[in-house]
Image (cartoon, rainbow, N blue to C red; front, side, top):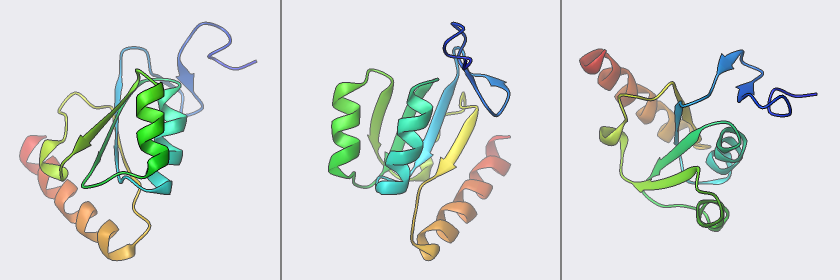
Amino acid sequence: MTGKDLGRKYLPLFIDMEGRKVVVFGGGSVGFRKASLFAEYAETAVISIDFSAELEELASSSSSVELIVSDLSSVSDGSILALFGAQDDKIWQWENRHFRQHSQLHG
């Protein structure tokens, strides 16, 4: 029996996801996989310059998923998790560096 079966929105990270928001960076297959998982538990925003057809379909069929065409500058301050979904190491390194800078500026 899962936390969801019990009427709670718990993910095996032991975080109460009720009323929380998750941000996924990356609009490809990795971002889709992460958004699909977290959308079952929390409001999920996916931030990317473009999105796969799978993500667009997920967003159109789920009220929990929002697609945001942007870069890291649009990070939500109310997010509990920020997940990177980039497959390319250069993109991941760029996102990591910019996210770290944003986090330092905004606590």
